Each structure stands twice: as C-alpha cells, then as structure tokens.
Length: 314
Image 1: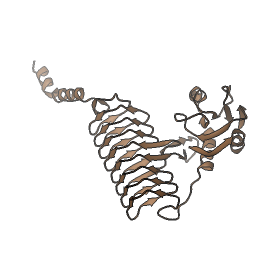
Image 2: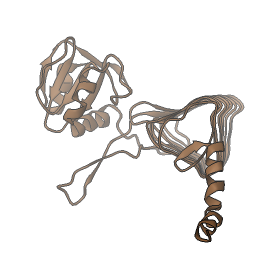
Image 3: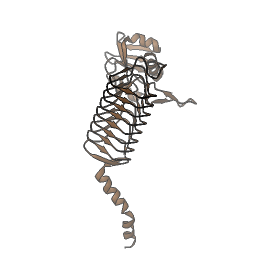
Image 4: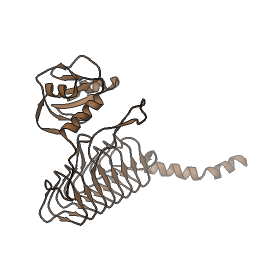
C-alpha cells in the first residue's frame, strides 16, 4: 500500500513508540510485506532467522524487535512487538470506511456496465466499461476491475487475507494481520458463481487478462494469476502463489502458498500441488507428479493383488 503523501520516519517512530536507529531524514512512501517491498516502504520483522532477509531487502524502514547494526541508508524502528506496530500503521493509513449504500458514491463505473440487483460495491472501487456484475456479488473497497469482465452471482471480491499471528500465552491466541492491499481483475476475465478472491495483505491479488474461473473457486491473498488461465470448479489457491500464463487447473485442484506454476502447465482434477511446477507439462496426483508417470504407477498398484498371488503360489 502506498501513502497519499510521503511520511517522515520520525513521525512513524513517534506514532508506534519505537526507538529510531539509522537515518533520521528518511521519508516513508508506503507499507509492505517483506516479499513485496520496494524502496521507500516500511516493513517489519520479529524473528531473528528472518533478520538478514529483512535488513537486506528493498525496504527503507524496518520495524524490528531487537537493536542490530543498521544497514547504510536505512532506518530501524525498534519496538517489542513489530507485528502490532505494523498493524497499527495499517489501521491508521487505511482505516475501515463504513458504507451507507449498496453502491458507494466514490465508486467509478464505466460506460455500458450492467449492475444487477443486490450487488454491493464498496468505496473507491473502479470498474471498467461493458462489464456484467450479476446479483449478490460483493466487491470490497479499492478493488480495480477492467473492461469486459463478467462476475457471476454470489462471488465475493476483496475479503481480508487469512493471515494471523499466534500468541500462545493467551486464551484467544490469534491476532489478525489487517489487510491493506487490493484485488485487481484485468480486462476480459470471467469469474463464476460463489467464488472468493482475497485482497493482498499489503500488495495486490491479480487476475490476468482473459483468465476464466469456474464456480466455487478460492484465490488466496497476494496471488498473481497470469493471462488466459482456465480454472475448473472448486480449485483452491493459497496465498502468494504465482500462476503463469495459460495454466489449466481442473476441478478440485489444491495449490499451496508461496509457489510458482509455470506457463502452459496443466494439473488434472483432484491433484495437490505442494511446491513449484515447471511449465509446459501435465501433472496428476497428490502430491503431483508427471501425469504419465503417475498413471503408470497407479496401473502397477492395481496389479499388486495379482503379483502377490503369483509370489505366494510359487
């Protein structure tokens, strides 16, 4: 998320009650998770094993829970609870904005776009021209939708990321990571009925041009889907996955978080994808393997009783 105007690091430090180390003259341009950071961003780290990744990232300002050597040109904000400090900044710069009507006055809707009854369109949403939004669709704040997009009934776009920090010492253990990202749906996309597409924690969940989603599909936070992909019913994709162009996922495929599925890959129905896949191949199984090899394996498994009987009768 980018700020409307740069904010002095000294102001950020005072706001979260942190000790400021390093460059006191810096200006923050936004808030971001460590895997999405750009120069000028604020990020946070609260586990020592991730210190090096955070300190050597593009982040300019890092909220951290221990005083360490500050890299040249950066600033550290030292506080006991970086997670809560980060969340407080999100709440301050992207506060929840209640809606008072089904279609917000701040929404921008393009020419020839049709909005069916009982659609909710939140604050600062942008929808292009010649779109069709079917009944009971919910579009959360800050969503961006291109031209010629079809969204079928009951779909929810822009719900919060499923992201929590565990506090073992408490009766209510999970603290919510507040989401300040967006969903961006590019032109010529079709989204089926009953789908759910979560916004990014701080960046964007993106559905590429020409991609088609069937019914009952879930897209996790920060996922980036390429162009002209085809996903059949009940596909579920974890947060921060990257699906390249022309990928086909058939029904009930489950995709884990933080991985890449390469261009032109095909994953057959009811497969499980736990790690990255090379493009241009067809996969099957859970965990997935090359589909031809998996089918051969299954054929041999079917022959186990026959082979066992031959062994026992020798």
